[in-house]
Length: 120
Image 1 (spheres, rainbow, N blue to C red):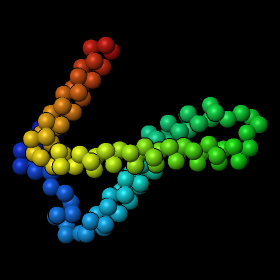
Image 2 (image 1 turned 45 degrees about the horizontal axis):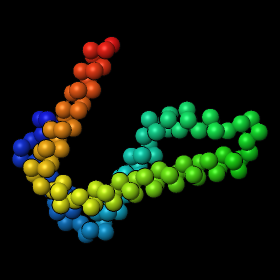
Image 3 (image 1 turned 90 degrees about the vertical axis):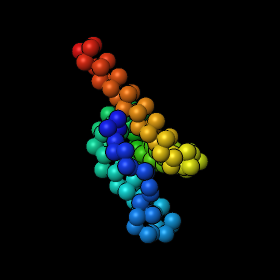
Image 4 (image 1 turned 45 degrees about the vertical axis):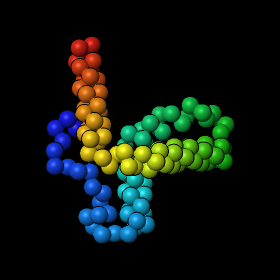
């Protein structure tokens, strides 16, 4: 992130591929869905977290409701994040803002790494 190419202008994929806005949105939705469904960290997190809310007497209906509520909450969260990013889309497209975001993110990751190294 700190070493991002200076020539990276942050152009969107739809400009390069010539896809329609709806096609780009559908492709982005599919990519995000597949990425999150196949993410092993989220699977491990859910396997570790969800059983705490179930008892030995929990029925399949209880488990189904818990799973549906979890999926709904994750869906709502990602919708909120995508709407927030969409609202700031013009800001994120500016090269200066993109560079500042990359630098800030890189510095946070370096700081976290230093904390881990120095406390371990």
